[in-house]
Amino acid sequence: MTAAPNILIVEDEAPLRMALQDAFEAEGFLVRAARDGEEGLDLALREDPDVILLDLMLPKRDGFSVLKALRDDRLTTPIIILSARGEEWDRIHGFEVGADDYLVKPYSARELVLRVRAVLARAEGGTPGLKKDGGRARFGDISVDFSGYSLTRDGEKTGLSRREMELLRFLLDHEGEAVSRERILDAVWGEEEFPSTRTIDTFVRRLRKKIEVDADRPTHLLTVHGVGYKFER
Ligand code: CA
Image 1 (cartoon, rainbow, N blue to C red):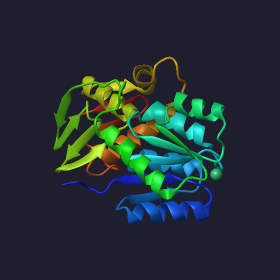
Image 2 (cartoon, protein in one colour):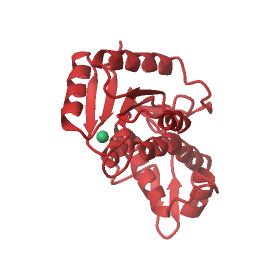
Image 3 (spheres, rainbow, N blue to C red):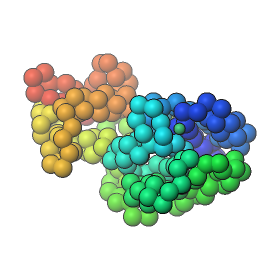
């Protein structure tokens, strides 16, 4: 069984976005589209696409910033940059921040489809240089595959971002223990980054949607008021 590949198109120019949407739907892709960088980042993190087409000049948040935020969080999703800007600086910068391919407008839809298929094939064979962290864990009716960045519940597989996975691993390692947001920040985000404690709450909410039957009434990832969180099997 091969499921339809899931593509996210982040492009603010409506005619271009719709043309891309049509082209990929005609190729059997499941298409989602975003009109600005914020929406693109949000959909990318929420919908777990197989591949992302990312314009650079975007309202609210530019393509580079979206790309960097995604690479900081989710290493594995192939990203192809689409841009009207063709300067070498852009191209090098794009690869530096983690683009898989780069196409300068105007491009042919045919070429784009071929490139998307190529990055998907490459991704299936494993991303070179990606640091994988093996191991599995089970709790409730959930099976976590840390090396595959995914978890399975009722036979349904859901992708995990790197942060989500590290957060889940940290909580599993401290099962039954109330851990403060500060400890979670140190362990999962480290000293290099300074996210607010609200970031943790956002990630906890995201993780709950993936592991809890009812995210509003969690039975695994519990809130400990005035402290932080606690994981219960
Ligand atoms: Ca644009």
